[in-house]
Amino acid sequence: MSTAHPNNLTRDEQITFIRDLSSSILTSIEYQIRKGKIPPTWDGLELRLLLEYRFKQSANLVKKNRRLIREFNNTVIVNDL
Image (tube, rainbow, N blue to C red; front, side):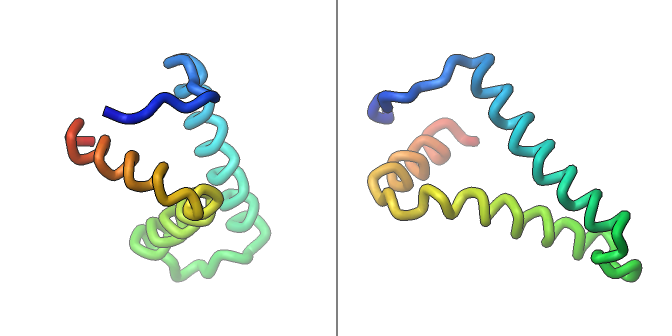
């Protein structure tokens, strides 16, 4: 069980957060495609890698909090996420 954080989100706030984050990343990548910055030869594999890279960049903001990462990893395993 993970320790409560002072900034816990409600379920609706969690949903809003993931929608906003995903939308921001997708909008940025769509913009880059339209501007010709993404090679036209990239197919689903490269685009998946780009999505993974962008989400990892976003996650790197919390990487320095080892306790948070440890609790997160435990919750993912215990809850089969």
